[in-house]
Length: 149
Image 1 (cartoon, rainbow, N blue to C red):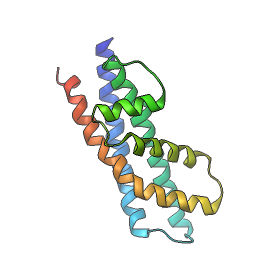
Image 2 (image 1 turned 90 degrees about the vertical axis):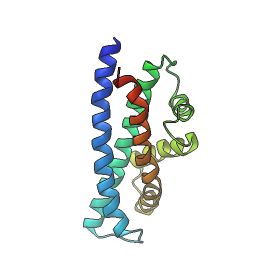
Image 3 (image 1 turned 120 degrees about the vertical axis):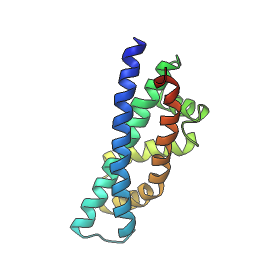
Image 4 (image 1 turned 135 degrees about the horizontal axis):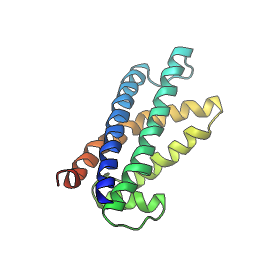
């Protein structure tokens, strides 16, 4: 079973790297656009890609990678909050509170339809993206202990 988990970890880490790369690409484009009161269609497309990629990377980390690491570390399943708190204790992330906010922001992205609120989401995603991306290297470093066996 552990071999299967290690193979899964390798696959999930590859997904994580790719998701971080494309999120970084979108982040650079949207950073140049900046926060405005109104966006043209092309700019909206770029921000929609950013928020979608942000949510995807957050899901991969929290729902897949953190869960897999917990399983390999023989930690109890628990809630999403438990998983995030353990990730902080393991040094995978700097702040559980920030990742709780990232998770809540991901939920807002999935359910927000009011144009004025979407612009506020853009602002929050631009602020949180570097924190989300920076956690990827920490996760990879942590996973080396399992993959180098």
